[in-house]
Length: 89
Image (cartoon, rainbow, N blue to C red; front, side, top):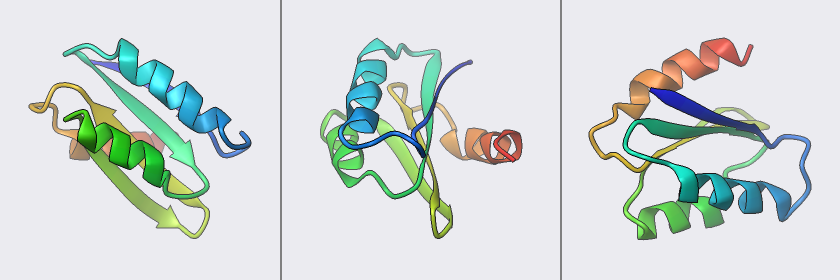
């Protein structure tokens, strides 16, 4: 499984959304997108849902959100969330 990673905590609007959209267009059935952000990116969450992507948006702390998106609905994003959170510390 290929992880496409973006740490958007230091990026200014609209760069995180632009980068995320670009990455989502390139996702295939064997990859997922993992983004760390300082807030919940509501426009990205809504866009992903509208496009029938599977998405998890998880708040770890006040300024730390983990967002995972997959084109393949069979991918267990919850498993990757746990692994990704361990890798980001």
